[in-house]
Amino acid sequence: MSISSFDLFIILCGIECAVYPILYPRTEFSDTGILNDYKEDSDDHSVRIASIARSWTRKVLSSVRVYAEQRDLCFFLYDKQLAMKYFAAHTRAQRMGVTADVMARDSQASAGYWEIVRDALADLVRIMMMRCFDKENYPMLYNHVRTMKGQVWLCAFPNLFITIAPAEWTFPRPYFLQPYVDCVFAGAYLMALHMFYLVRCVWYFLANRWGNRLC
Image (cartoon, rainbow, N blue to C red; front, side, top):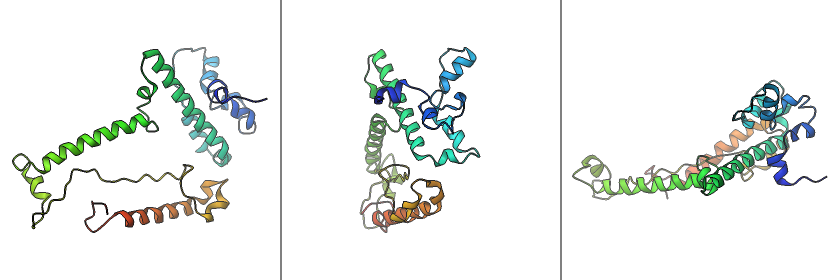
């Protein structure tokens, strides 16, 4: 029997119970069907929000270590939660007569969210650029960006920030972490050292003697 992606991530609930019956011995343990189970038990059919991420995190932080060791289960629950979130955003967008990216702009995983951040930073750069040359209204900033020789370095541009996300597929994993692929937390110490040296290398590559300007 084959299951379509739409049915797997949107329609069906409790798939994890069928795949991992040992981890989900009772229906109440389900992460994806937590809302349906609540409605059946309480007979409360009001609009409520049930978080798959919160339910799963409570299991991972419990004393039952095997939940955190199931890599495929973790990725499946994440994909399902993300799919349900954006499907709901698309449904609301159709009902309100707008595009789906408008309804998903509150999520950092959405391109629309970073478009707003980009526009805000561009506006900030424009304002600060004007202030760096406004000697009358901002004399302290005007003098701060100028050296003794009259050279100008602008404070208009935002600082560069680097996001290190080892849980992403594209994060570079060294060969010596291969034995810990199925149990990531066991190699947490080595991963932390790897991240430290990686960030330090990136910093040495980008930073220069002025500290806040790129090469």
